[in-house]
Length: 282
Length: 286
Image: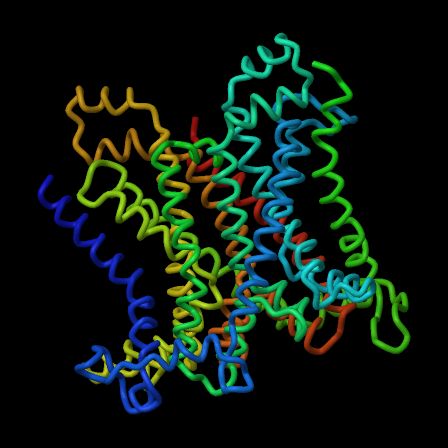
């Protein structure tokens, strides 16, 4: 029994590992190919099947005029939009989550849980439902095709995540520490900023990571709400796909776009091992 | 505690969210009752759009059933695989942290960008999958065969989002109390019995949460489909969101698209509530 289980376990893990790694390996080798080694039949191993070159990587930083694809600007646009929207969502979400965790609200039939549910339920909203009004409204206030317009939309996407994770986190931070701080003469704001927040850093990091993931990977809103002035990375790379399909630069740009979030994977794993995520999904 | 302060904490976030959302939502409802075009703006036409949707648009309902099929299949696969993986790296194994990070990585990657890579991966003549299968005399049309294209979408979705299930379930496993496992060990329960009678029941609430969260996200499948197959061949991989997108932002039938999105939203809310209730009943018998 034990041996069979161990064998199956490692067998399954191996298969899954291959499945997870395969597209990355494929992209990595493809990024060093040239026209002939892509179109002249499938090639796998550099130096054996084909002669690697750096063309796919070089065009990433060239401007379109020089025949490049220039993903530098979209890259920084993506970084800027994701980070700003995450930061705003975390700040607002954390404050609301703290209120929902520590105080009781009652307005007719609406109680704390209903308000929390209202926040989280925004994730249920299919993006397509909001896309048409956002498209028309942002057009009306001249924010279509601008970074600010995107940030506003991303706050709607990300704040529910921040509230969801932080409410559960604050529920686990013992109330005694706020109460002690209040008895010691802090006002509620000092108690929050000086005592509760410093004790909530793991929660803030996890919430921040999730906001960054879901901001960075969004394609749909960027695709619908921006055109030429502002381009985000996913839109740029997908546009590359629909043109003549230069697989080498496509692969290189895909790898470059995926790279920063690998760091996030390490951070999430670290906090996962410490047991900081467990409350969030019950 | 003092009363006034709680509102200062709560309101900024709440009002920003309501402020951004309230007009779009009201507008969708208003728009859905209108014929909209670029030269005379909104003109009220009552329930005409809804009548058309419920009586004269099989394509919408087909896309909805397709979406249900795709999201339920992918979520079930993600749950089974995610649970298996989480269970495997839960206890001490070699390179535990390496595997945990590795299994998380796909969810950190941008779906559309990875889909671009998957397209080259499943390319019929230049992709490695068909190159290897070619040795056995097979050359499946991953992206242009109506049945197989759905399967390809499922593969890509499972690759992309199993890590999220894995993350939620592993977090759950790590938070389980130790006592029931000790008791089972003292009773000499076999690993299989331990899983069926201890681990799985303890994980039931977390499982329900994870499945619902993933169903919510899976019901939005749209960008993968857009890049991988553009809904094709024909309409064989078209999902609700994608159909609404075509009607609204390609053919600019905004009013009709709005009535579809509103209907779609209502159906989503109802079916997710029902699924949550049913799952709770099934998994939490006591």
